[in-house]
Image (cartoon, rainbow, N blue to C red):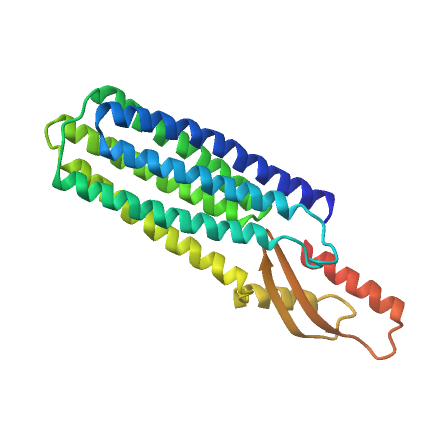
Length: 276
């Protein structure tokens, strides 16, 4: 692993760590205020934040292990641990969504008035703003370092923004006297969360199964390699993701009389061009 790749993984690790600390703060804040106010929507959002702690922790661990160099036991490196952590994130999202759906439906059937509504509204608003900030931060870093797990965690935080906004609306309507709408708000949040979890889980499973990349991207690489002087043909191209990296295997055709040293130089040139 080169120094740039190692630095990228370190950036991703830090982003996941800061997100975990923020989620711990939000989870306890919403949990305490939710219990004191009797707001089931805020309590459900606190449960969601607790699941975020484990999600960000899973991403942190995955990126941490991805920094290990390949060894005799794992000659292809530990990069897929990052993708595996992305799958764990997806499962956590789905289960937290189911939990929120159950609690919200019970709240709809048995609505109760909310205490300290202004404080509850303020907490929901703070949660939305913090989650929006971390969603943009994690997705930005994830795309820069090509970490699917961090991008997934960033999208999860964006769902948390919608969740907190729906909770805010539910608490506000309950404050106006429509107490049962808190439960409706919670169900909407749960549906969004479960959908996102299923989508992210599918992406992670496909990467773990070494599914081929987009045919258009493969064709782009094929055309690029074939345009390099000295390359007569390209065949048996295989491209796959492994954590934040992309691995490509291909066979090059050259002139028969090309010396071995020149063939090696050509292969290195191809490697540099594809990386660029």
